[in-house]
Image 1 (cartoon, rainbow, N blue to C red):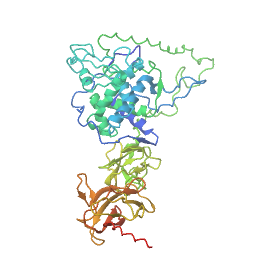
Image 2: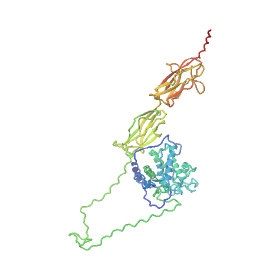
Image 3: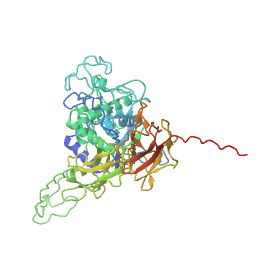
Image 4: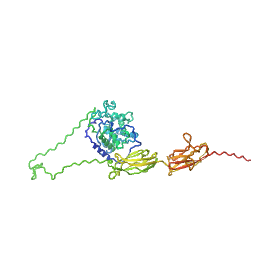
Length: 588
């Protein structure tokens, strides 16, 4: 962790309870809406070594900043009168280069680890507590910090003891390790997770692009899905094994999710409080002393003693029966003031949910390549059956299928409306047929999920017709001059992508493959009288391969059958050509 930044007044260390309250308050202020998790494929990175709270952490459990965000949601930035840089809540302002690095890291892992669902706001939250966003954005144009950011020496004196692992290459210490850079990696962890985030060919923990991408891969390791509460908490704890650290990061995560804005590099808000009681790193100057507090207001002077029979400020005598200067007793004895007990924090929307009910289709069916007509929806209800708004519900398409939500995602997160209902986007069937399940569950809760079975059926045709009506005739042992072409339709429309089978059958009543007569040629040149795996083109048409005749003359049948039951039988003739007749002699 870096040393104290400049001259600051240190606030009292925050507690875990306050951090948890901040998380709940911020989460409750979120507005309805859907976010695409972009989980386009199954989880990636299963072969990685998963950082665990039971093992080494990314930072070696170095100190971190414990400042909490404001309880109120960030005020959206507004333009200054007459133009200029937008202004908003200072705490919601992120240095331009640092913000760009976080967003590029999110985009990169969305492609390489689509099942992770890493939000860039999580990187911003960790960057806040680890280095104050690279010391308020003190980085150059390439994203490298202007001065190194080093944590304390991990020599076991108040911290973990980690002997040198990099020969001082990253932290300059050949005896013990120190956390390095804006994301505060210890050298041994950086050696395993280093990345080149800005494409300059180097992997530098002091560069915000490299460090942010390395942190993204570290958090996503082991196939974690950060849209899942347990995986999210495990990822944060793998960075620093502290419950207070977890709550502090979650507080900033929710705050940044409510809105941020860009500020110039070097102008970000610097944090005040640290978990190590503000101890500076070795080799850094001690922070300036606190400013001397202003003198307190002098106490009011007591009134001077008055002569008997006079009241202060006048010459009128006191009322009979009272002693001079004796205070008047109260009319009624006062009731001692009892402080009101603090109100418990309001439960977050997710905490108010008692059950999740199906509010959409009970079952879904669609043909391959089509859009499902029904929609999947779920209603979050409390104990009394009322809908709970602003609850995040995650919809996931599971099973061996290439079906996706509109836009190509396998999972999306939707926030419930005022009635407590969340509706998933439309679902588009893929080409892979079979059954799968659409599952809805409340994010950050372990309630019973809503499951909707779904089926993708194969494309089909209900009618099959030949293109052209030319007779198909061939001499024995030769090749048919024409190929057979057919067109499939379904309910009067062209049926594209429909599977079909073509067979030289024995007779109109016997659909078994014939062992003589016309045939197709296989890849090895041998006769083939049944073709499987045929499929109509985008216009519903199917052109069969060339046909050949053996030496057996006769009339034969070719039968074509499509998925859905459309059938067409074509007649083929094998006959010798007629001998030319002798011409008549001319008459006289």
